[in-house]
Image (cartoon, rainbow, N blue to C red; front, side, top):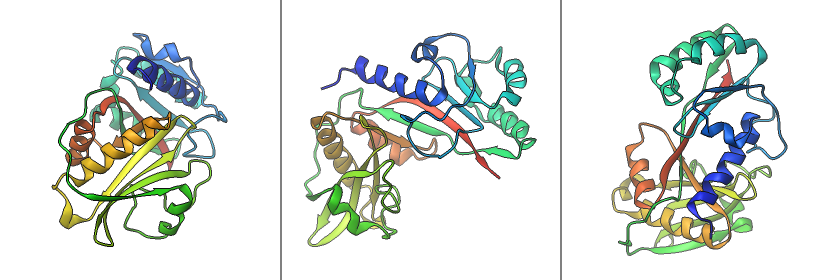
Length: 250
């Protein structure tokens, strides 16, 4: 079992790997600018360093960026709060500057960690568990774009999934990918006609608890506007922990 402090420290170490900085840089008052690096122990969402990546754990911002951006970023971020750099007006200015390098910002990722109490009410549903090898049967099935990877992804494999069943029919599924050996990310998909019944919360809660029992840290990500997903996260004991954004190619 990990304490909240230990969980936060592990995430700081992971973000430091990916932003090419020190874990303690996320505790500083001033914003930090570093050069990109492709560390072997990163979460492997890309096969080359991001031209620009920015992360904040609620205080300052740490920015890993191509050297050509450093002078502009130092001037632009000097008087800004870290969380303020994630406001739409600031992101728009950053995006406009990136256009000159044939890059653009991708979506912001709002990330949650299991730092709070969970709701105690449990939905009365039948569930079925799938271990890593059992998950392969679902690849190519477009019903689970959030719960599972589209295909087997060895660099961040799907490790575990739990499905809500109605008879022999799957009506919802939550899955976990091992984005690092310690950090497993949870995703959830529920059939439209079964939403709003507490099924998503139940599946995420069950999966979170099982991941913790296996000695891993579950984490959860969603977009700013997905209120339903935020509610699931909060009901399951997840709390906002960091936000990140990076570039994609034109």
